[in-house]
Image 1 (cartoon, rainbow, N blue to C red):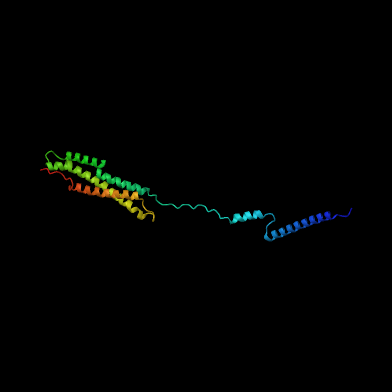
Image 2 (image 1 turned 45 degrees about the vertical axis):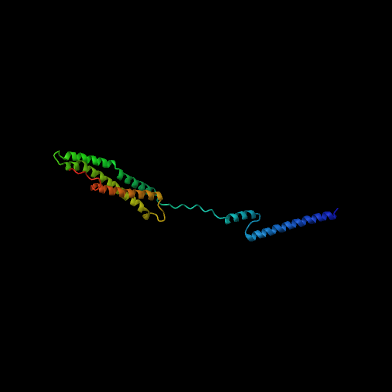
Length: 199
């Protein structure tokens, strides 16, 4: 009964050999983990940690720098310049009221015994000159505003071009201002559409 068959001895020998190999492998794994400072069985965690460490960090989006003036003020100035230029040529309610006032003042201050030339000058000439004067004021304002708008980029942010439509509107205001100013001066001095002769 104490004897073992060859098959039983072989099975036990194989089992013992397998157990010895597992123990040797486990011992080598512990030694390797001890040398590297890691615990056995944490290889997967270590790989994930390493991949997280080596992964490139996502950079936060940089804040966009302020682009400076948007050009709204320049556009508004260009439109105002063009509008003032048109008013200087077509007339304004200020010029109309000023002309009517000069007509009334001329009628009140001029006696019926005054000469015809003096009456014409007091009633019509002064009123026309008042209209020309206010037209010249609007033309000068259009000219100055247009020039300021065109010169503004030279004092603003470097490398920021001015919008083409702003330049066009500003140049239109400058041109209308020049024309209106010229016509106002010619009318005020009676070179253009002067008073008719009393004789």
